[in-house]
Image (cartoon, rainbow over all chains, first blue to last red; front, side):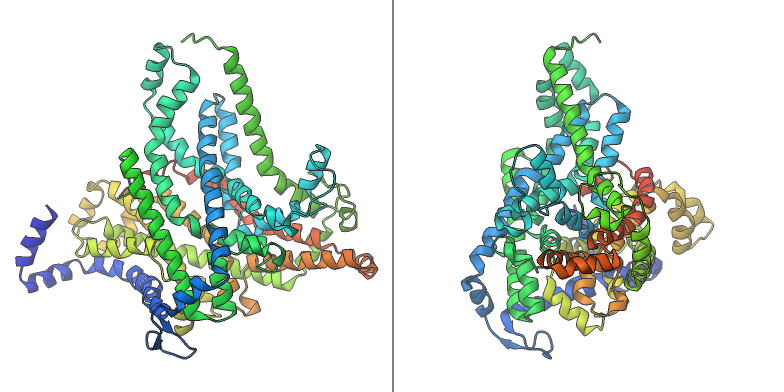
Length: 319
Length: 298
């Protein structure tokens, strides 16, 4: 279909194209500012990736530095930082997929079981408030709560779970947990909205039919609600997988006091913070660009494999 | 409809209500705690134990932060970037979305592809930084505005909305000889209030909450937005408290000017949150449920 239209268009004389373009010049003018910005701020940096394969020095015109082949990548893969960074990046991503991804689905399912409309709406309204609060504030509150004399320690001590306060942000072993919990806290309500909308669009007759068949509540949740929102879950799973390794930058930066907290370094250094550290602070531009390109590559690979797996297993896919 | 509720149903309901209440408390408590601390006397706060009510009420902490010139300037910078960024962003996004919603647009597929590609591929931090440096956007207010005017996701949402508008809406105006711009500004924009409000809210909240661009691309103090100032206060308060614990000199310092970094931090945080709380009712109102759902697969 597309092809045949294209073929017909190709036969149009060039002048006719120009005439059509001129006739819709208003529309084309409307496109212009946006496309200019996209080309400048998205495509010129894409071209700038070329320095990953070069040895960029201050003052060089971009793309005209000495070629370095894959030297920057080799340096990155062989650096002692590489494996700890990969471990941290993937561990945080994995824990987020495991806990932060299902959390809003569970919230949506729970809200669906609530019959008091007012209660339901209040819970929803309150639960997505944190989404609109900046990470600067959320991290600030988190750091305050996790201090040895902070609220979390008081709570845990009054419940007799611990005997003496824990300095959460001084010990690396708690860091991943803090990242995942704050991620859930900030996103659960907002991310549930899309599932709530999906549940609302399920045909209510399905539930009535199940009632007549004498299906229990859990069976209805599983066979009707869950299967009704499955396409939404799969699409979001693919999208999340594609962006997961890039999703922790703000949190890590702000929860480590802009990387000043070195006590948690062994668990906190991820690809994004590493790129900032070596690129912006040590000004190793080519090296950091190579690391950044590797990060994009991993992201796209994750996206494609999630898409492929979803297609194979459930017939749902993004593309 | 006489479904007999079994014991297990009651247990399940109870469990759900309890969990939801825990969620509500866990969401609200940190804010209420911050508010209580910010309204409590600084010296008294160091005794600890403030939960959701101030023990010794005062607005002294807010008086103190009101004297902070950097914070004051930060509010102005943030307000400016929010207003300008939102207004220009909605305008440019709206025009792009409207043009792309027209099947007759020449080059439509090319434009769309160019946009979608940027959702998956980006140059990353360093090439972006080098670009900003080469076009003199470092240490400029416009680094907050120009790159953030384009958000493909928002544009697709708007385009989906414009596509759903009936053709007849603009036909009569066209017969009267109205130009495309006239149709867009006089007919399309006024009938699209809900979507415009939604996108404006997204842009506005994004701008207000941004901190990274200021942290990395801007070093001039007078251009720092309020989030950066808050970030500095949080980070320095960590030091201040460590120093305070380290030596007796610090307690003298504390007694001297009754300023407690924790009280200051909390008061600043509340001040930074207030604008968000003020627009929150609008977020509720304009927030079309399942707005994104239609546009995810498109």
